[in-house]
Image (cartoon, rainbow, N blue to C red; front, side, top):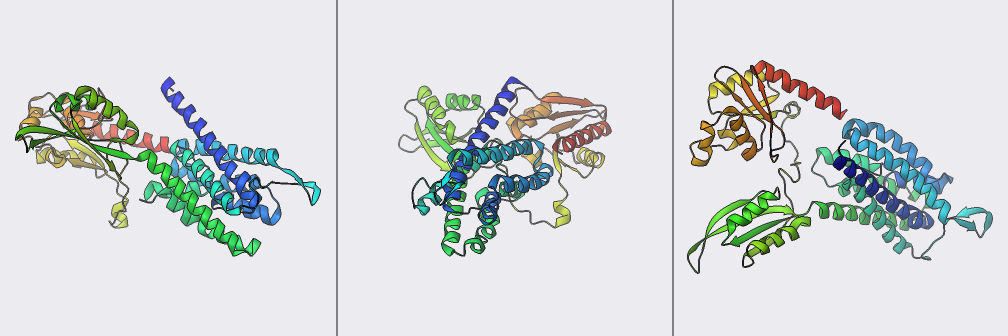
Length: 423
């Protein structure tokens, strides 16, 4: 593990720890002393605590061990290692906080109780507890972890379906909160539970949206080329449109770029330094999908048999249908072999035509750089040149094979290794 990766891993664990502490504070300081119920495993554990006196951390860890067994298969070992850490750290922190804040019960000095720090303000306890719990869960999710329980279920659903994490957790927790009526026979407790659930879910969605918020810049400048080059140097995409200033009837270029909100100040400083007289418009981008941003998560309406056929896209650097058909037959149905035209590379246009005069390594690199797909070139003698990896790398991983059969064997080995790594 490199020093940079080690730093990011340690940072993840540190922030997950902070998230766990926030969640545990919400439960022990504001929820349990006021007999409030939230959703998830913490809600189940609190109901059992109110009914039997079994401390919440005991029930919490038992239920989560069962859920973690499922999560290891669905979410990968990396996610689960951090979740396992969060679950056991949560168990310890819940126990610790109760030991720290508990006081003797005035009605029975031999027993201990959790004090109500804000008096009889049950609603205020509900609000503060929900905000702390929601912030803790969001902080764990943002750093590739989870506090366990219905968070695990939410992460699994979010992986496959276009549903927000907060909505999934809310749907899972309605039954848990409603069941507290059978303990207290008090509908106000149920209502408080739903209020707490709503605030918690809204807090989660707020923090998750804030992290993924993006903005779109439209920059009108006389020095558009220099600004576009500077933005590209920061590893962001840029599109330049040709326009006309209608007052002066002179040519103008319009730069469009979508970036994360946290990076907007960097772009503003850059534009001001290059052209302090540029006209800049910035708008919120509520949803951004594509390379460098979020992945598409839409429901698949195809028949189930077709949905199970996940095909990896490979570009054959040609428009020769015979070569493409030959490659498709040799590589099998798992791979979707596409031509240059099918990915938008029209070699009849001047910019794209340069690819035809380049040697194989430069041809596949050209496709990778400008279109993002893994690509291969099939030469007349049957040799194959393959490029793979992230499109924004300075140098690409390029491999050469004697024929298509060797290429297929290489790709199949990669696929098997990836499956084993994800288990």
